[in-house]
Image (tube, rainbow, N blue to C red; front, side, top):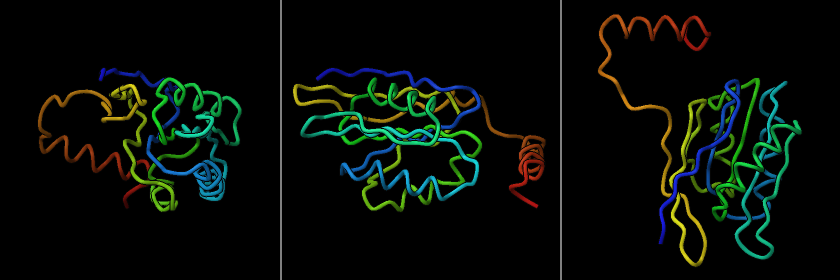
Length: 160
């Protein structure tokens, strides 16, 4: 078995969700979930089929984001994994809906940060071991940092 790191490509103004599911119908069900979740959201989805023709299946409502999801999913090529790229929304707006899709088994990350996916490759195929989401912690927040966090959440409308 060989361990590898795959760097995920994404524009700075996009968020990604990486997860695992279990059925070819996943791509259509996640599409239906996303298209009805946030008006004006743009997205692309790609799903790594892990039996039969083993194709990257894709859907979405933005061709550039679909292509980006396909490219990232193909670079991973990990069975039954899926990759969502979104703009004009945040993962917090759709994450519970995606997790409630009956085929979804787990979510590895939902982020705007730079991401590396750690995969294992054997003679049978590839699997996701985990992700590196963002950077290493630099310290523990101070009272000023806590106030800054609270002010920021109110500024962007997530708290009153």
